[in-house]
Image (tube, rainbow, N blue to C red; front, side):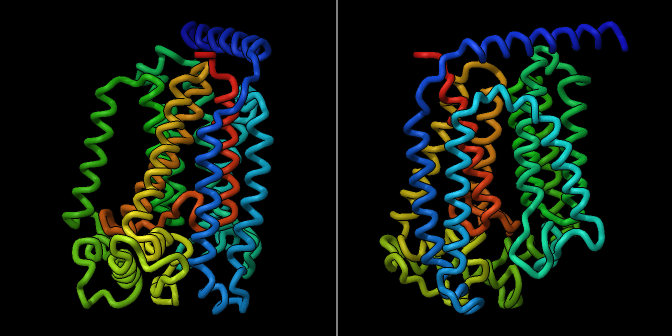
Length: 395
């Protein structure tokens, strides 16, 4: 071990001692009420829209029009309970599970791509659980939280060392490339984009040099150009559909989904057809209760209703970053930045996909799309933000 490494270890131990002492002395104030109310509002509206969007397909598939709603409501109750419990925990304790969370996340992503272990659906192998049942989950959802916890713990200890290549770029770049490689074999492009975006945002806030940000943006632009120009043929059909969604050649698959999504959005007009009165959800629009639920929102609530929901999401994201700015320490600030960036990217990408602003990547809308594991984890993450908010210094 070099002298520089020994010095880094010593600084990390001293930092941990200071953080533990501060945590013991910190007063436990009230949670951030505006953030809590926004979370509860989105969860409630999301359940209502899920019920409206899912009952035709639920009845067709199971004979029970409330099938998806009841399962989602159950996970919502579980997630809200987790949010309350986690919100009362001193967030400094999450440091102790950061490495474990990342290690478990990577192990689960490896398990998914092992033949016979991962569960395949719609041409992708993204799930673990019991085959031919609804008891399954996506390890990528856990990987998002694992990356946030580990990056927040590690970056918060390094301070000025984040400006160096050795300590600020290489270790985190390796982790992100490893996770991206594992998710490539699923494949899960949208999940990969989310995790890379979360990691990049946390590294930027952590203090990496500005030119690394420029290099990253340039790399993203180069990859986008390679896709559009045909140099990379992976998912080239989705690029073609994105460029010409109304082409009659795309009568099935992603092309059909994109066209029906745009029809649903256009049918809503300014005021919408009315809650529960969508026509596209009657087995015309695929994934109407999952990836395309925002299309049903637009059809039933119109441009005004959809704009109000986007405004609520915007307020939640702004309030999240406000909490990050006022957090007691770097660890808390980075935790909230990671979680808030995840929500922001996911909302943007979902709405961009259903409106055909970007190619279809299959990404869910937080608090709205069907998926019990995802909803429970999102609400648990909101509990982490509330935990940080309870220890903000008095203004």
